[in-house]
Length: 589
Image 1 (cartoon, rainbow, N blue to C red):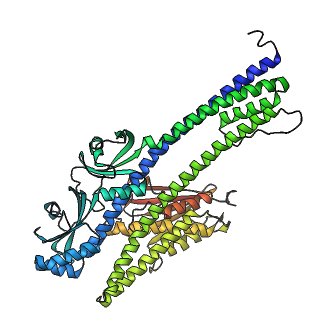
Image 2: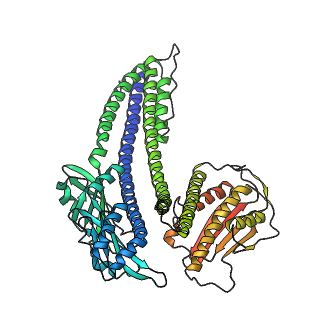
Image 3: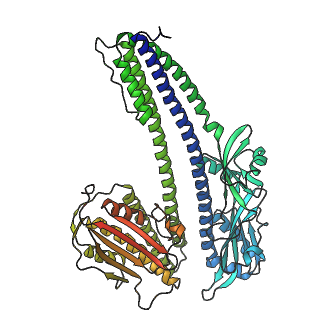
């Protein structure tokens, strides 16, 4: 041992070999551990996203069917046929409207629950008595069938308005069967199954997998199950009956599965490559370190330093300079080149993973936008159907044209808000009067009204601030519009209010070197669960909202160097406070 370390060359050789081995071993261990952890996390994240997407697709089907059922139940032709109580008269309409709304089953009853017409197979198993108690309400329920799980929505057929007379009920349903499970699989890249209790009724997997799936129908969180020698991660999601409520039969659940075995196959190849690369690199480092130890130590020191930096900081942009001077060792240049190639490959893998994540985010955003656009298109289609019939009265034609105009305006607003939210905000900073901006915003939010239902409590001593007045006005209009709708909803719900109290109050105050703008409404307020998502894109509590108003306002306010805070009490109202600096922030300026 003494002879091995007696010379400087041997000491450099031994030290360099050990250092290179440890550095590369740690780097490869770190890459392997991170790759495994990221693959597992991506698998679980993808499973959760797929389950959410399946729930959204099923709820979209339910909402669409409910909307179409409402429209059909309101048709005068159907009401006249049901009022006769004559099954031969009602049956042709049932067949026609089932095809029109693309339902698997359609059933019509009289007020006492007697069946007048049935269209579609497997409609006889619908528990009519469960919906009769609903009277004027809509309901939704699940019915297990040999073909799969049948979801049925029930809407009343009403005549008159004050009070309405119940002529009967319309039941429409769609099957969650093997075909729908396979379609969801194509959309999400995950296996899908539908079950009630421990009975698996439909699945995109072979029927032989039903016993294994039945054991995880009641699991909470992500569970593991082996099917045909292949390991799957599964997530059971209880089904909600739909937007109208109703009781679920036998605890129906949606099972979403992803193959862990297939997803992690690439790790075996990576590990083998890492081990091979580690062995080759260590042997190469040993050989090169010996040669460099006999010539010069500086090239090896540079490589070792770069390895240490990458292992410590994870900075894959670190490169070792490869020089071609006459006194530089050629093997040292080779080692430096190999290290640079390795870091470039790992960095390329990271960029590819980031690109996949961006594409996944784009897919989620596209799903939400499609959901927001579908309802206006459905209303426009129904209005066009009324006009196309040629038998609409002048009043019905005006109403249909008004609906089309309203929904096209809504579509244009959705597109505008999506573009405003997606594009970077640019600011044009200049001195502006906050009180004037508040007055203009209130007038815009109550456009078309004789007088805005808002009280302005503006501080006359408020100084001018440096801001983008047009952007700030946009943010305030969004907030005031939300306040107006909340106040109108609260008034419609009969919320208590002090005498002569205005629905909305806008106030301004100076607080040190900042200006506070407060918007307070007397609306219905929000729950703690709703408050947790108010700044999430596309989250809205209104049927006609896009859920981008507050996120856009938050982006604008924060871009102006300010902050926005919201407090709300359910049943009492909401307060939005904006704090702005007197001078422009450097980033915005």
